[in-house]
Amino acid sequence: MTLPAIECRNLNKIWNAQSHAPLQTLKDVSFCVGRGELNVLLGPSGCGKSTLLYLIAGLDEPSSGQLLCDGEPLQGPSPERGMIFQEAALYPWLNILDNVGFGLSLQGIGKAARNAKAMELLEAVGLQPFWDKKPSELSGGMRQRAAMARALCMNPKVLMMDEPFAALDIQTRSKMQDYLIALWQRSQASILLVTHSIEEAIGLADNILVFTSRPGRIKTQIKVELPRPRNPRDPAFHQLQDHLADLMADEVNRAFAEQESAHF
Amino acid sequence: MIGVAKTTRSAQAGLAPARSMMIRAKLGRVLGTLFWWVLSVGLFAGFWEFAWWMGWADPLLMPPPHLFLGSWSDQLKFFDLRNTIGGSGDGGSWLAVLKVAGWTSFRVLAGLLAGFVLSLTVGILIRYYRLFGNLTLPLVSLLAPISPVAWLPVAVFLFGIGDKPAIFMVFVSVFFIMTIATLAQIDDVPKSFVHAARTLGASRRQIFLRVILPAILPGLFVTLRVNLFAAWMVVLIAEAAGVGSGLGQIVMMARNTFNASLVFFTMSVIGVCGLLFDWTLRRIQEQVLWWIDDNGTRK
Ligand SMILES: Nc1ncnc2c1ncn2[C@@H]1O[C@H](COP(=O)(O)OP(=O)(O)O)[C@@H](O)[C@H]1O
Ligand SMILES: [Mg+2]
Image 1 (tube, rainbow over the protein chains, first blue to last red):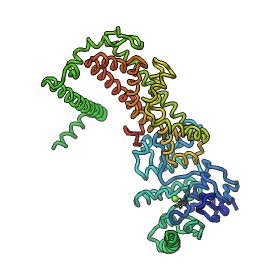
Image 2: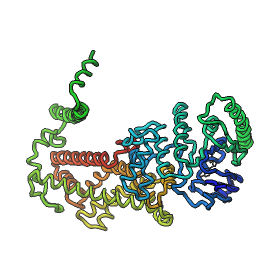
Image 3: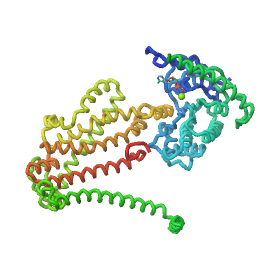
Image 4: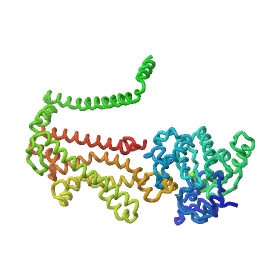
């Protein structure tokens, strides 16, 4: 059996551990992201999904536990583990082409090679005609596609996405999901996508990791074996949706109950 | 109907319409701006002239524009060709006016430049090196609210008279404000900009040079522009206080000799200089920092 792309073992993250009010955000999180798999983290907001992605991206360190990338302990950020944020985070002082080629330019790759590669990716996300535009001249969906192209330009083994489509309208969102699937199938990267939308999770995932409310633990893992492209009108889709809705409702209720008891 | 006529005309114009239309639109904008400028200044001058004509404005104390501009040949002799302190003025030509304005402008420019570069450096060091920050930040916060005018004696103690104290005054008037602005700008850089760069493999140095620096420059440049007028005021105060030659000194001399025409004549020169400075900085901003708009917000 091949090594998983990412393996988390008993990850814990406690914010402000030294203070009088430590906040445990992740509790004993263990899971694997298989090579080339599309995993979706689903959970109520505030449960620690972003925190987990930041740990895997190497932008932050766990309080305890192990993180392995290709079987090796993970050390800091690396272009092999790309990340896409909710806001596209494109640099306003660069045009779209230079934004997409930014990572390559950091490695000192020459302009011609960089632009060729960046153009190729812009074409894949349907933004080729906009290569010389400023980020502010693009719509939200286009910006997010440019951000995908920027991350994929580095040929990452793992691509993390933190609620990448949450700020987009529903029509744009479903188009973006189509783009994502196409890019994923082309790039063979493993994807770890965070969402709080059940429909998005079922529409995309090979594997759904359902999180509990804070402290975030993995409540269940659900393999989705529906054929792609997935049809939300498929009865099996619906069944899964109901099942996940029940699981999520429990967690949301628990989170609210906790908040209220904290108030009184 | 009008719409139809328009489309056919632009269709006839052939392949070049985009360019010629752009030029025409730009010309229209420039003419529009010019119109309001002339009207605004003209109205003000008109009221002044009217007040003089009615006998409300004493021509000795408040000579209207036609008097103080009309007597330019009398004023020119007060402008000195050489950059000397307390020179009695042996110029007597427009070249001398240009030279005096040039000396003052040079002090403003030198002070601004030094202030910009040093405040940027210090601000960055404060944020990047904890110890340096702990040592300097309290001092900067303490000195920032002190009016530049209060620094005048210090400028004289340190630098005597001449160009240096005037430049120092301009420098002081922007340095503390710009240092604090640099800190605020650094803190305002979206975290996701830095995070994205790190996941793309940027080193600390690269993050600084290719993310933080371009992200903070526009805001700092706008701060610089805002403080430009303060810098002009300060340089005139410094010159008037006998620190150096220049426009400020001429205003002071005019006051002492009750030469109201010279006061207003010099004030006009100062106004034009300030305007040119602001205009130049705007153009620089447009060319170098094209991704932000006039107010420093991201386009
Ligand atoms: N830098 C931080 N310092 C302290 N607490 C934090 C920090 N970042 C996140 N948290 C807390 O951790 C919890 C989980 O946050 P997050 O991972 O963003 O949740 P999610 O992405 O699932 O909505 C939240 O309660 C948040 O307040
Ligand atoms: Mg989040």
